[in-house]
Length: 379
Image 1 (cartoon, one colour):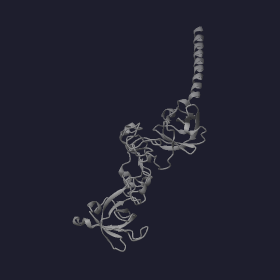
Image 2 (spheres, rainbow, N blue to C red):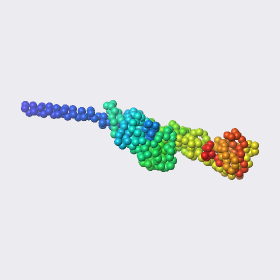
Image 3 (cartoon, one colour):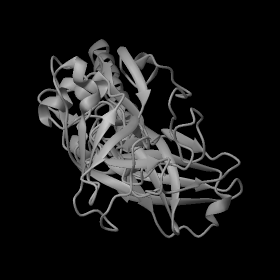
Image 4 (cartoon, rainbow, N blue to C red):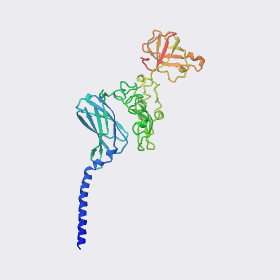
């Protein structure tokens, strides 16, 4: 009998001990459930650029692949001594990028030395939980650059050096290389810099994971490329090729050569007269301008096949003359060229019959001319 009583007492004591232990464990689990949410370990943000706009700071944020319900972003702004924290609600999905405006900053903007970002995610309990700092932008000695506005180029864009306000520039891709596998989660392809120097061109990058049937913008979003997207295929982004752009808009050109249509054909934010590639196209010598009272037609001497079967359409372009008294930049109304090589020197050009400044057009045999795509005639 005593053995039974002893056994019962031991069982009761074990149950009591288990109850005590479970009470402690459940309390700990309840207190820290938010901290072990999977979202904390999968949400990752990349701060790509920061610049000043008036009294505010603009920060470009890209969300990297990873699950979790991102609800807010905390921006930690530091001048090396003090910090200010600005929190913004967000709806940023995987691989999306957005520019956020940080307002109400009290510290002098010229003293800002770093900007850090930390994601805030919704945990299983429904409460928001702050994750660790995901990325930090360290401001160089030049301080924060001025915002160039939509489609604007940093002042030194195109010199193959990363200057203030630029993400990359030509062949300068630091800290990345032309191998896409060095940038984000791509596995192959060629990385380059956009013509604006404000972001990387990932059109030829492949292998980054995605979720079907999602889609995202191609790298070029200006001009005739606005709205062109790539679709997630086989759980990977296929990249955007020249065919993507040309199929979407037949006016697309890898290098802009159509410089009189008013469009940004190569999608770099610049159109026609603003475009650096819209420069000199062809030069020659005038013979036999006529009729003498108006001088609106002239035969082209030394014409080559480049003029007869050109890559360019010269109608609507501009011509400037040297060697005489005519100094105006005049628009070409039309031109006629022969289809026989022995007559290449008989091309005829017609100037607009109502040019600025009126008639006559004072050109003579022997004057040289240059045809330009820009209305400033190379100025």
